[in-house]
Image 1 (cartoon, rainbow, N blue to C red):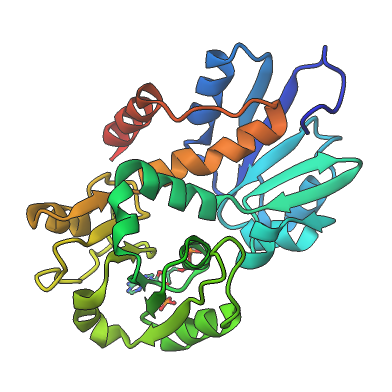
Image 2 (cartoon, rainbow, N blue to C red):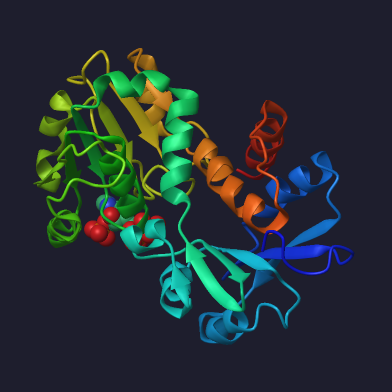
Amino acid sequence: MTGQGNRQTPIRACVIGWPIGHSRSPIIHKYWLERYGIDGGYEKKGVRPEEFPEFAKNLALHGFAGCSVTIPHKAAAFAIADRRDGAAMAVGAANLLWLADGQLWASNTDTYGFVANLDDQAPKWREAMDTALVIGAGGAARAVVHGLREEGVACVRVANRTFARATEICASFGEEPPKGAAGRVCRLETVAWDQRHAAVASAGLIVNTTSLGMTGQPELELPLDDARVDATVADIVYAPLETPLLAQAKSQGLAVVDGLGMLLHQAVPHFEKWFGVRPEVTGELRALLVSDITGRT
Ligand code: ATR
């Protein structure tokens, strides 16, 4: 919504999900509104799946310039938009909606958030881009695989409990060199769930994209004893901040990347789109979120 609307009217945005109580997006966007002295608003909107199309189609009537989209609406947001950018097209789901020229636009910033967070927390991951092992084959895995392809990882291996979903994700990206990867072809391979341990040894980057390890969920069983010394281990789970997988990696002296940074970085393009300022992910903002997470888990 950059540059649109009456400058005197405060711009309002929201996060839409169901349930929405857990969302930490308001903490992030309110911090930035205050930091940049912007007269705007950001709130949570609990919208049931059956009400989502009406709400999204009438964002302006509801008083919003755009919204963040979270579970379970990411596929519906992609489907309902008038226009979709390249990131949304690649992932097949949207976590950002905004109005421009009377049209509803959709994007997906999870890929950006994942890569920006890796670069932020473990920049050396780029020195081991030969092979990545991605655990999981859901929507989050699609965003991660897309990002790794774009960054030029030579081989991405996908292990998922339901093997057919791993096959599907690999087949859907195909062999075409992705944009931005300097023409490098990214080989996509499936790994059987019971072979994931064996696949650890070849990976320069290991990423958990499943909900395993999250508070209240079983942990991801993935022994890292055979991991390369130059491997980076990333988890998209951020509650707890240090998942059992990350604790294991840390105890072996491997580089670790927690999921909180992804949450923070994926919000950057959202704020910029609605409020016109590209915000910074500061240590102070991270500390605010850490204190909220540790207070609630
Ligand atoms: P998201 O869009 O957040 O990625 P999703 O599409 O529901 O969510 O995907 C969740 C991922 O976590 C999937 O890879 C799922 O494996 P399946 O495809 O076999 O369902 C994985 N997952 C969830 N619970 C799991 C468990 N107990 N063991 C192994 N994998 C699990």
